[in-house]
Amino acid sequence: MITAVLGAGAWGTTFSQILADSGCLVRLWGRDEAVAEQITTMHRNDKYLPGIRLANGITGTTNAREALAGAQIVVVAIPSQSARTVLEPFAPYLADDAVAVSLMKGVELGTDKRMSVVIAEALGLPMERIAVVSGPNLAGEIAAHQPTATVVSSIDERTASLVAEACSCDYFRPYTNPDVVGVELCGAVKNVIALAVGIAQGQGMGYNTTATVITRGLVEITRLGLALGAHAETFAGLAGMGDLVATCASPSSRNHTLGRHIGQGKTLDQAIAATRGTAEAVKSSRSVLALAQSVGVEMPITEAVVSVLHEGQPVTEMAHRLLSRPRKTEGL
Ligand SMILES: NC(=O)c1ccc[n+]([C@@H]2O[C@H](COP(=O)([O-])OP(=O)(O)OC[C@H]3O[C@@H](n4cnc5c(N)ncnc54)[C@H](O)[C@@H]3O)[C@@H](O)[C@H]2O)c1
Ligand SMILES: O=P(O)(O)OC[C@H](O)CO
Image 1 (cartoon, protein in one colour):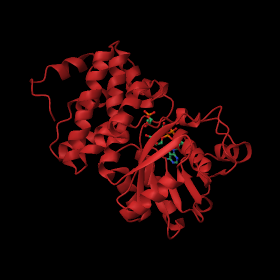
Image 2 (image 1 turned 90 degrees about the vertical axis):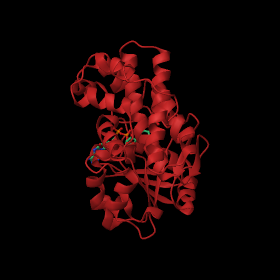
Image 3 (image 1 turned 120 degrees about the vertical axis):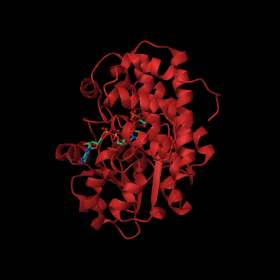
């Protein structure tokens, strides 16, 4: 099967490797000519995936028409806030039967829309031809062929099955799930929670604090998801608890890393500069909070992250802010 991956960063390149190892031909589109040429001629992407030899079935390109020609699956791995602008010019080149797949874990600022909705609008596709892939999927570990599972979600079972078959190999196991809203929200909000865990750890706090933030973070994700129509079971699954644990535990998570820098006293600009790659929660924390407020859902950890990153609240006040709230019963 011919596939296209848009975005030649860490995850786009790693997912291309998964597709190639699952038997697909892959055209990997990026905006950087040198990266595309290195992918095609040397089978490497030193900028985003140093030390990894890429499969011969992956070709790099900077040409949109060339990337999409005959591609039955078009995968999008661009930072969420750029997705709409980057994707719109691709629409005329999409094959008639193509399906699009979001690998992105964010919520669009300004519209508060999930990435599957942004893709549908930008490419002019019905939701039946959109899937989302999300789970405990740190690119570096998968590029090293460490086994992991994921969730492929679409409202159309045929789309989910097509995508799951295309990305199924001996180190990557996809499960399908029709709950697109839940799967996508889990991916976007866990980044905010991982950033909060990073802040706590950067301040020298230990496992009790980490476990508290993860557990109450899962409550926030679940509360928002249920208010927006997600299924309760999704939150205990790979896209929910699975990805939350991976991202909060791993020092290689960019969201976690950025939070640690903030906890250690860096400014936001210094923390962004010290973190390699895209930390989606920097911007999505604000859109997630706006989305929660639009449906009347309380998200105190997310609120505290927004307040520290974007409203000038000293990071040293974060714990007091969260613990001084009125006591309540534990449930949702
Ligand atoms: N890295 C991971 O482990 C991982 C895993 C799962 C999901 N994701 C998600 O995948 C998405 C992409 O993450 P990543 O890790 O590949 O990011 P990255 O920072 O490694 O790479 C981003 C890529 O997008 C490109 N890009 C940025 N702005 C662009 C623009 N305006 N036009 C064209 N290209 C642009 C960059 O050049 C780069 O190639 C994010 O939403 C992230 O949350 C990442
Ligand atoms: O590096 P992060 O923080 O973007 O996390 C990567 C993946 O989303 C983990 O599943």
